[in-house]
Image 1 (cartoon, one colour):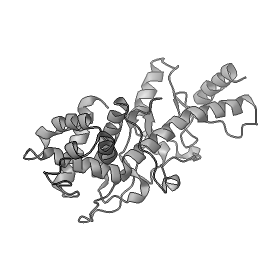
Image 2 (cartoon, helix red, strand yellow):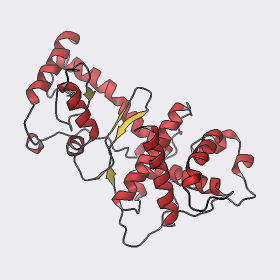
Image 3 (tube, one colour):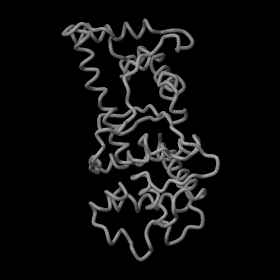
Image 4 (cartoon, one colour):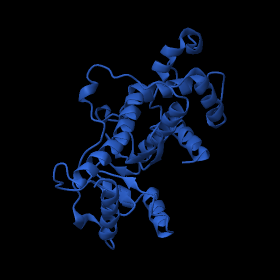
Length: 284
């Protein structure tokens, strides 16, 4: 997601939230300026972004907010506060409680490189992956001969030369078992990334039961992803867990995939050859 698309994602989410009156237009009275009344730590805890980051965000979105005024910053702060705590939800029209499944890819610093938030929460991860831009990119990359690049996924994804999954029924202390341990350790980064994202922007937590159409919720998830990456780039501290967070569902599951779900030709053997080569050369 490039910068222009990232900005549009934020703008679209803020505009739609304002137009539909799903969040209050004023969280703070004008005289209670949080830039002045809150110290830096309290400001970040309340709005998830630092004061300079919020000012930069306001400069980006203000030209696109209807009837910009001197209180436009308060609209942005209201939205950020809502993102952070997931409150101020109203029942609107015929909207239903909606869940969106959003498999994502991140780097070692927890910066999200790709997210696909276009399908209902009931969709299988493998279906979403097969219909994502990241899948198309990885297929094209390998077809052009760049086969030293691959992603790691859990057993809910199909084994491919560009997507390596764990070995089933690995014997303890075997090369396959050592590969599984290393693969799981590296893959835990995305689990941690999802946890950081959902603790920082709690409206994403499963139990918040958002009242949005799937189309609107997709835009809001994309906006939260952009804001998360801004926090990572700024080295902001992660949001600390609160009482009860140990029981929260961060949306990461170990699931088995059924081969009959896969469509088209089955390049499973190519994936096995790639995985076996890594096991043979790295984990013997």
